[in-house]
Image 1 (cartoon, one colour):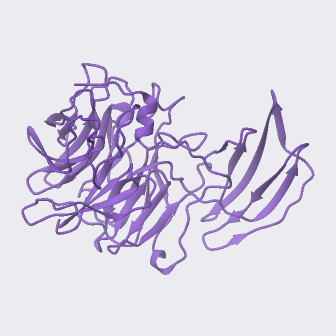
Image 2 (cartoon, rainbow, N blue to C red):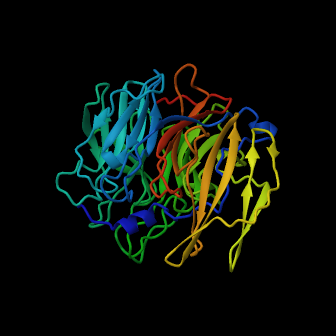
Image 3 (cartoon, rainbow, N blue to C red):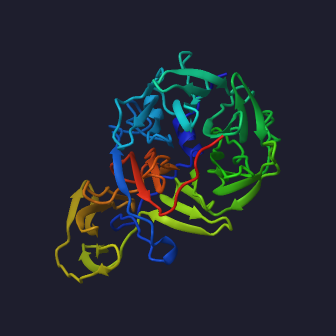
Length: 450
């Protein structure tokens, strides 16, 4: 049963907050502590097309949601806004995009989401279509894709509740099956060819007074629609623990797994995050988290210690004060390098204002230098108190714009490289920056295995 969900409700369920930066230039923070000294700078791999207008209205733009890597160097990126999957070669260049083109109904939030590459030579993709109002939409569930980009339905996924959509999201591999999060239903499905069953969590029966509870489930549905819950998945090396990001609750959940692949009771491993999304893991079993809502990439130790590896920062320095007739605005100009910040005080008596129909706009320029590259980011503050920050120019390090997934490269030369997709669905920037970016972390990632 397909159901319509309003765009506003869908955005709310995805944790869209409309938060904007308070000011200053955006840079990638280089951690100075010893633990992070081997973390490199973010590098742009590919910049996708942003939406021409609202990202919730056609033509949507190219907004990437998930990334998977093959042992032969290919990277696969889902682009649900175009019902596509892209392939990038071992040289990080796109290969005849799109690699996969699903039947598109040109509807918001209908398309491929989570991806996983099986070393046996198959790519698996979750696909969301329960939000479609079209009978021509692809089936909601999981698809199997061969090396030529040909796809076929692997298994259908349904919540079983009339007018309550299922949202199949991330995928990971078990020995003889797949595990798939359902972000609306609050369960993890075990998926085999042609059939599904609940592996962890409790499936809601539709009773509004009896919504399940527990670490996996999302917040209870509201009048506006379902909320977002379990999202990214990551196994430890011997598959005795599965980590799950719960985006709606800001937590990372851990599930013990026995030698037969059966789950134990889920427990909260880390809380206090904003909207954790995709997960990855290195050989020391540190967990990497794309915190979609905080614009951060985190690393969490096996003991639960949280470290910020990359984020958008404001750098303080000298101040320039401009005064208008009724208010004083203080702005900051700073020049930063990887290991030091140099500031210079500047005074001016000229107020840079533009007044249009009773609204005053003050523009601030901040200069950021990273790896000897100087660029300019602009911040605009309106009389209503709203602040937006324009992305820096192409010469600057790339920004984080709603990072939705992280994964390690799987081929020689890229096993210490983390690839990140910027979804930019509800971007805080004046110009959204959907992109694939990467950075080195000085330690190899776990290999994806059955």
